[in-house]
Length: 70
Image (cartoon, rainbow, N blue to C red; front, side, top):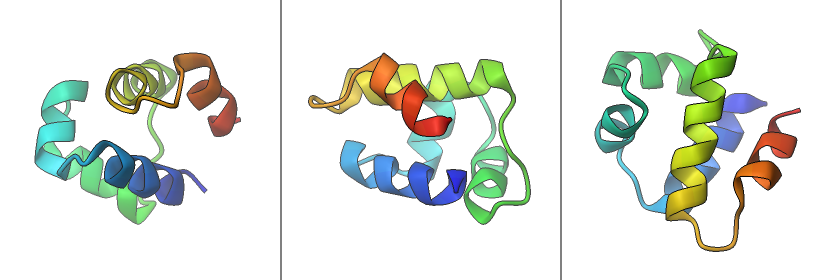
């Protein structure tokens, strides 16, 4: 489930919802909707999310993160 994946990676990257929202260029409310499962991000946002996590989590690559989403 995307929301669990997102929460896990936010913790791994030590990011707050607010900071993460800024990095992905969305509102904090949007991040909250993703976390609660009310919305699922469009492909462009999934790519941005993976890029942010790949830059902040040493042991994960962009490709690995994208595969985890499938």
